[in-house]
View 1 (tube, rainbow, N blue to C red):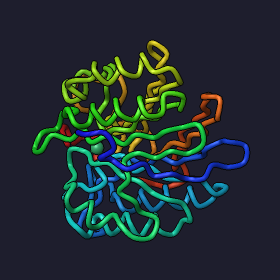
View 2 (cartoon, rainbow, N blue to C red; view 1 turned 135 degrees about the vertical axis):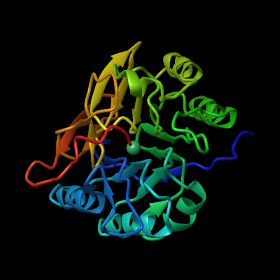
View 3 (cartoon, rainbow, N blue to C red; view 1 turned 45 degrees about the horizontal axis):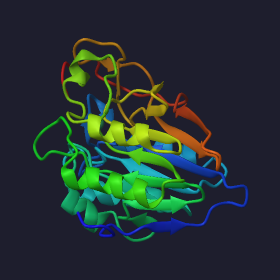
Amino acid sequence: MRHGTVPVHRLAARQNGVVELVQITDCHLFKDDSGKLLGLQTVHSLNAVLDDVATLPPQDLLLATGDLSQDGTPESYRRLREGVNRFAMPAFWIPGNHDEPTLMATELTGGNWSAAKRILVGNWQIILLDSMVPRRVYGKLKDEQLALVEQSLQEFPQHHALVVLHHHPVPVDCFWLDTIGLNNPEPLLAMLRAHNAKSVVLWGHIHQAFDQEQDGIRLLATPSTCVQFKPHSEDFQADTESPGYRLLRLHDDGRIETSVRRIDHMEFTVDYTVKGY
Ligand SMILES: [Fe+2]
């Protein structure tokens, strides 16, 4: 990838330099409202999440980090598009292993939606990566995606970096999930270790919360807006935790505050006897 081929999308920062953002992930929506994942009606839980976002003070932007559709239909993406378009904040997306990126590009557009993959806001740069491998569950960063990170960090060496992708770049202590993570994390992590400013990596895919720091890099994953996977499990296992999403506050000095919000007040029916997804 040649320098400058991915344009930078600039957003105005708040006066205090803080960037407040919402991450939703792994919505697994279907063509029809009745679509269920492991017995859970996924549009129902997404709507509960979006209703919860609506109770918050206005946020600056929303990141939708893949597996937004389960069946890769235009209708499923339209459902997400319309749900998010009720807010007054820009929204950005990346694909996950279940997604159809070509359809996402045509359907996740208009209103709040932008296909931008580099965002500059205050002292932060947000880099949205495509880790999808067609017809595979694991992820990989192609050379052009690694070049995008390299280019971004070179161009804005003093900006803190929030790198967003679908697949996990470190083991998460779930044997079955650790076989389907990002299969080439090292070049990305090496670039972030060498970055002069702070680095945060944020992902979805694992349907559970994760928050660690390694070599100065903050590593965050987020519950799905639908079914949860059980932490520390050898084999596939759904969890009894509620659907959720993540909030992040990025400070101009590189500090971050983050929290996971769960939709505890609703009754959900998950079929915990299912042994795969
Ligand atoms: Fe997922």
